[in-house]
Length: 200
Image (cartoon, rainbow, N blue to C red; front, side, top):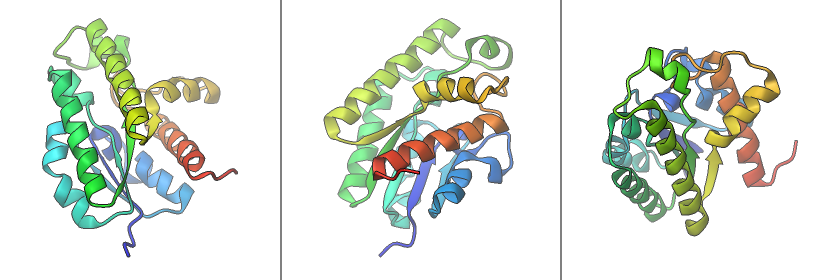
């Protein structure tokens, strides 16, 4: 029986770009939930990259569950959405075939105003934001159809930011601040406990 509860597979948002590893949201969530969580986020990674390393980083570690959040870099780099969707489906199928329960993360929306000043996107800012929204809608529908639990960071992140009164949630329009990562941990923990039927 695996001693590892979960692998978090993703890009820089999972890795915790710009902060110490102890402030990355998977680490914070592991402490709050009392779970063993392995962070397999890689800065700049795409859905294709995650799919390529899925066996080594997920299946061979034998976790009970895998959290998968991919697609943000695909959009920023101009990858056609259909390829991102195909890679997500392939990773879900691999996890199910290995007896690992998948959980899907919907990436946070970018901050358009900050993105203009601090970051590069293949598409224009408005098109980029629309693609994030379209991808989020596809993920919600996909997860409903497959009966897979998803954690909707895209919708929950601005809600929690307002609730906690955080003035600056992004470093650069893409990556959260230290406070932003803490918010992601809160969202993950709240939604994960709902999935497990645990009430505080």
